[in-house]
Image (cartoon, rainbow, N blue to C red; front, side, top):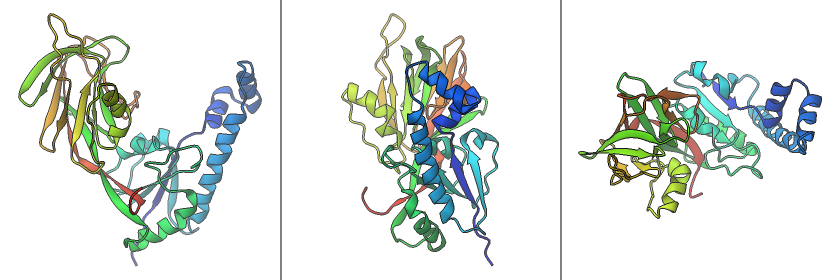
Length: 304
């Protein structure tokens, strides 16, 4: 008999859980907020909605199904099996947090509170969980389909690497100017800027979209397209720096190379997670390209 895949349910702490973790008791957490003119009621509401949605998901899983629940903070030390099915229950931002630890595992995003969260990557409401589990067994067309979303890969010269579902950021940890040399398409330029980002099709609707709109750039990339967009943030012209290379696209066989000229606090991070970063000091090189890995995301069938 074929062994059924293990279900890995991934969540993150709610605002109420974080408050209790920080202040120790409910009373102290409430006092802390009330002393600042705030109410704990909003945190309670968010927590109640989330736990109700999570309970519906868990109730849909048969009692004999192999499962494990994992907090976002434990992702870096968890060993995923090749046939695991990953169920992310939470906001869309939790999916990129998970994606860089996966290697082809099927991933399902459940939105526990559709009235509060958009649900782009976590596109399924809790009540469809039974149908999702049935679909996993048959893998027919049905109401769901598989998207293979492109990711970005950044590799440093010493072999350290990061994966990103949304975007890679290269720059300074503070608000100081980032100094570096940029190489792309046979061209090279020394720059001083607020850093640069390299976005996937998934990320092109987020941070990259905000930058593109301000600069009136045409930024259209499909989430499954093997292409990245790179954008330099506020490049500054000076006697030693230029601004000609400030935007472009990378195909599957192309790369963007950045050579750090930052004495300290140069940094590379992915998907907005600054604690999971690569240092980027003077003389170090980063190569950014389309990753060979893809996120295998189960989504509703048809247009959304």
